[in-house]
Length: 295
Ligand SMILES: Nc1ncnc2c1ncn2[C@@H]1O[C@H](COP(=O)(O)OP(=O)(O)OP(=O)(O)O)[C@@H](O)[C@H]1O
Image (cartoon, rainbow, N blue to C red):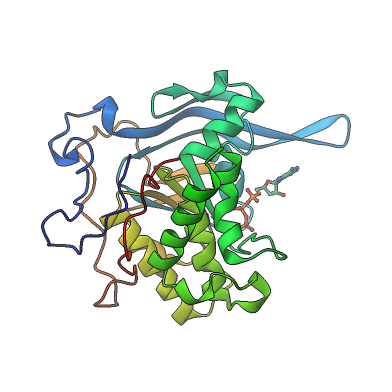
């Protein structure tokens, strides 16, 4: 699993794409070890009333390799969130196959699915979804509490993550006392709490002004490049999508570009474009917590 030591890009020990595993650029076509998730023939239908149903995803193929920063774009109603809910194990497909890190997701029962989700996927939503009546620190601790991490370790780790997000002086604030950008930083810290390999972000900049959205996007780039986080980013913003390493476009529940199962895998794309900010927005941690790196 990823260590949270911070090393600026270009410095000894800095993370390079694929460094925690094999260099993806050296991976053989189709190398299983580099594929984080793979969906084939995913069908999702919803019941409408008692007697009919509507098929939203008619058979989607979608994959993500480790180290990718994939954006999913499409018009409103094209099925992005429906797909995200299935990727994120929040909902189940009616048909198809889904493997995540080699695990056959379709075979997991609800309890196993929930645990698997908590360990492997961090969510970031447009509306932050923070718990309003508890502090930023407690919000970040929450996923670790559910994962059974002891009080001391989860406190240290939550502090460490909030420091990384530049929120050291706001830890004890409740969400209502935070700006939109600060809330999203807390939400990102929370998403990182159990050190998941995948971050799944649904319109994370949608509720933010352009400058704050830029800051959040810079954070994603840096988490992708420096901490080996694989990211799936759902957005309406085509300019932000164009910065990512692959853009997948959905139309009427189908992926019409960016996903070609017939294309042999030739390694992860190069790291995304350099963030506009010349300096890291990930504050270096004051110290690595004792034994605090793992869920
Ligand atoms: N539970 C449900 N029951 C019936 N229809 C649903 C349900 N959830 C989603 N849909 C329908 O599925 C379609 C795709 O919705 P989805 O939210 O995935 O689109 P989207 O691309 O994320 O849209 P937006 O960009 O507006 O968020 C829509 O037509 C929606 O009405």
